[in-house]
Image 1: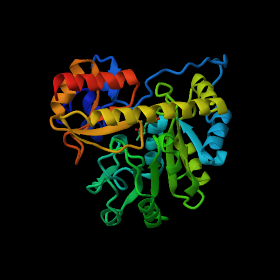
Image 2: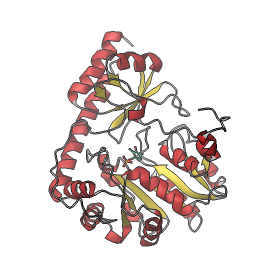
Image 3: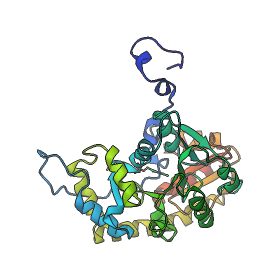
Length: 359
Ligand SMILES: *Cc1c(COP(=O)(O)O)cnc(C)c1O
């Protein structure tokens, strides 16, 4: 739809919504592949049985078992945990609770995850961007001079799609810089692949630090739609004011509670080990392909790769049913594709296709 369209029901929509480009999620992009390496999902389904048959009743807003088990897993107090419909809902709740439309701004540092900008745009909140440095670390000087009017700063670590951790000393400097001025959100969607890098231990020192987590990646539950926000009890209380009355359905809470038992967490750690071994294999194999210009180091379950002709690689693999994520549009990522680490069979399909086409 064009921006100019102002007649009919479309004309009734808010102006920023009419102008909005929705998030290009992996499923929205389509494709008829059978090897899905474009959404950083776990490649195999984990089985669960529903144990609760009380669907005549509304669910708890914040299911106690889920909150307590996640708090124990994350090493924080239950009062520091909010559960929501994926980490994406957490991103949005923060904007709704802290940003005045038309006045306040959020800040983030591309190349990074796309939903911070989309959520802000939906609410008519200014998106201020400070491009990352050449090594994709934070440009602290430019951030410091761009903070006027900023209420929420989003930092993704490890970063999607670059795969690397943000320097902890920069994160500390950012937290000092923003004290009493803005919320700093550390998006830890991939922290299970590098658990020692979590900032959860800093929560008690910084009441304006917020950490986002999810069951969608290492917990292999992207279809469940369940994520967590860790923060000071004051911030959690504010988010509880703006969250929907029943954000999680009873089956979601049921399965999330099972995923967070000690056995569920052990199984997650085994999956992480499997992915880390497969990541090594895929990185080594990509290094033998002539059209590969650079394979970037990764702390996650995906690998960013720069190709001599990424357009041809993307199309060639797409035609063979292998769907990757094109990152060309992001600043400083020309020629880059993001490849999710899947099964050995899936890695082999990628490598065979690249060899066969001599990309
Ligand atoms: C996948 C992802 C999310 C979204 O997680 P959901 O819980 O599935 O909404 C958030 N942030 C980053 C960086 C992600 O890659």
